[in-house]
Image 1 (cartoon, rainbow, N blue to C red):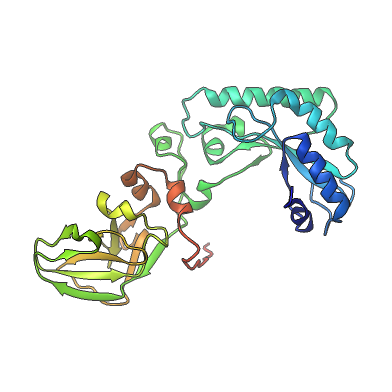
Image 2: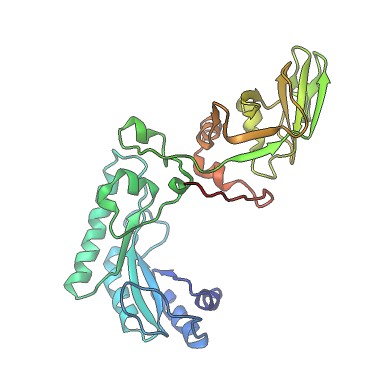
Length: 303
């Protein structure tokens, strides 16, 4: 509730799912005049705040019970300060295309929409599909989809292509650094914290200024993590430290300033967020979300 005046001032559209939300938003609306009319698919009086009603059909994270949706929608419509712009739910297992639970959720949600229609209520924007729902469940697309991981050009689950439900996505995110230091070390040298990585032969070791404070998991080096330098794969040598990693390039040439690709393409080689995720027994979502605010963002447009 304390954040609602800011929501109104910024012209944001809140998702609500309880009478407590409705009353708190009404109180905030009385205290703060909206900076601009809220956008909507339905005509809304200028002072009204557009809201979306969320229904819990089985994710059990947030949302109202399906049997409470009608009463909440009616309360929104009865409020002089609020307007119903949309109704939504969230799918729990859409990344597993074969699981019948998604169809059951959509059926429950369809029942809510039917109940609203029977009482003359236009739900406005109807949305149920996350990335997995949008790709693997056409019935979930409705009037809007909420793509997340697929906006990065990444599949929500590696099983999608195996099950024949994948689409041709092109990864849009790359994570790069550069070589900051190069040294030649003899066989038997042990590297980084814990000295767990030992050189079996004389090798060039490149230092790269990126580490777990930037989103490179500390454990990546112990599960075969690699980087790309000059178009070739090279192992991370020893433990990832807070803001530096070491890379064993063997007897190959490397110079300070060389680009180092942790996620992305270099030459004919590619390292993806899912490559990290598989090695770390996690998902690409966690990898992309973990890239910290320390890392500068550069945005490119392509045709």
